[in-house]
Length: 291
Image: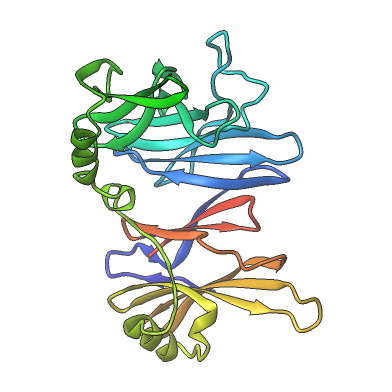
């Protein structure tokens, strides 16, 4: 589909770049540091590995790829790196975590430079709770008499050092936690919503675009701009095709199949940030479109 040219000569509604995470990979998490990168996690299901990548968000240039997290010796290698993820961002850093043994809870915090992939600091003893902008609320897990206990601290995000000890005062910790800004708001992300009954603005925008079954859609409405993923069940296989479209003033300006013949609808696989659309195609490819 042809792009739209703006008055300043730049192109709108056209693919800017794409990044293929590798055959069999699953692009799982994306975060956006303040310094202009997009950092993601990819899962390699057959080998049960979790690896990280970083791209320049404007050009798609690869800054690092296939980065595993920590090992017991402090290196960036671990046999069970499958159990890792991305926690948050602050300033120019991205923060990753592992899991507690035989537990679904997180453990440890590693500050990664998104430009180089280097570990700036690491705290293996803490569990992340909330990003409070100037500090992180964390706790160290322990037990007393067989019951779990949490000892709360405030950390400096840039150094990993303890700024304040809260101790076992959960009321103070909970009060601080309520002050945190939701991650998507802090990073400036617009996330899709699954359209349900009573969502008037979204339903009207979809119908103006010619979509009469809004209950099979996720969408983002931003003024005259509509981005929607349509989930189309196959009458033959019973599987799902997911089609992503962009409409401006109810005119379709971009479309691509995000996934063909999937086992289930391809949910929560696109977002908008800084008038750029990011979406994941066939689980393996991250694509950026100029809006």
